[in-house]
Image 1: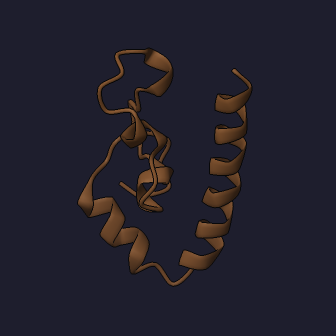
Image 2: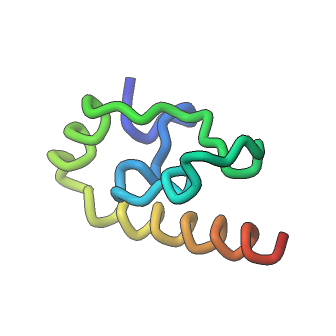
Length: 71
């Protein structure tokens, strides 16, 4: 298992999963179904290529938030 697997929340690794902004919402749009696991966060934090992944994840987060706003 690796922190870059599809079932791991890359936004959680950045300490900003948008689903955490709406904890009481039952709407599926705001629900994160990916893994939020300290094991993967530690793996991410200790990765020598962390900055490259961080840039990739930040770009993905920006796109995701823009889609949320437009919806």
